[in-house]
Length: 349
Image (cartoon, rainbow, N blue to C red; front, top):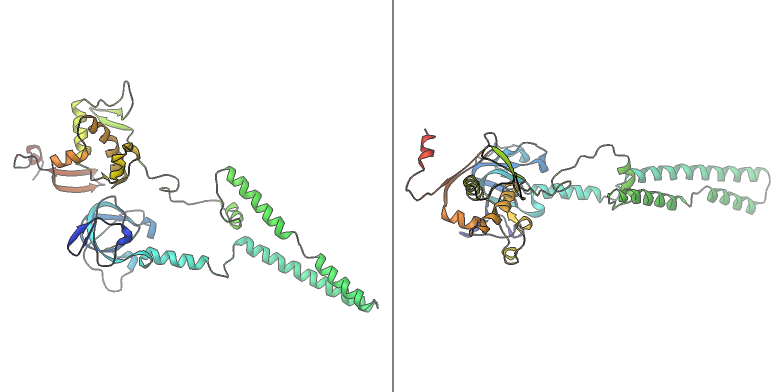
């Protein structure tokens, strides 16, 4: 969601330019390097960029002169994730000009260098130097001995060349290629795809592989499996005993909480027209909230309503971001009574 020339519109991240004012919500990825100008308990996950495990709070105040760019608290970096709160920022860099873009460019230039060699390349070159030195040494040695013994000069030179050629391992290329191919084939059986044969040797000598879980080992797709209400845990879906009763009064409160206390929304109108199952639909927002709306939307549709309609009925006047340390997420709604609900008054000071 971007504000450009005084107009607010929703555009693709690839269409952003420096100077655009971008609104960021909880669960969204930062589309470009942003200078934060407004924030409400906004925190970002910089793990992919700096390796910091804890979410970092963003601020509006400028940093001191000479501070480290990556540690700036008023910059939201491209590719990081807003995990709490919301905010607004001015685009200061896009694409390859972003911080992560410059890091990627450095990594690409390092791997594309002409002098870059894999470990097996280094070993083969070292082996070839040794074999070449031995071959040349033996060839020259027998050439000298031939002249000392008075052999014919032409025969002596031919014999010298033969010794040198005989010591050259012509089958080395085929042997290495076949060995790496067989290793890659065995790894393919275990569902490991090797794009570069030279990487097989490096991968084979690896003891520990540290990998980012989300998007690599998992798909960042969450689903609702159980619901706790009325003092017990119920199955979210299914038939029979132990399954949540959608007709119970308590489940109505659960529906209201999910509908009104989340900000995730379905974003593809074509999926709505084609009646794509809700579990397969695309959404905008936090993964956990996406799982909640995917679960509750079919039940709301069955009762003749939906999340969008429920949110329109009771528009929120204020939303307090998720407080992970207190396990609280609050949404204040317009009830139509002209004042804040009485139960909330009793809890305020």
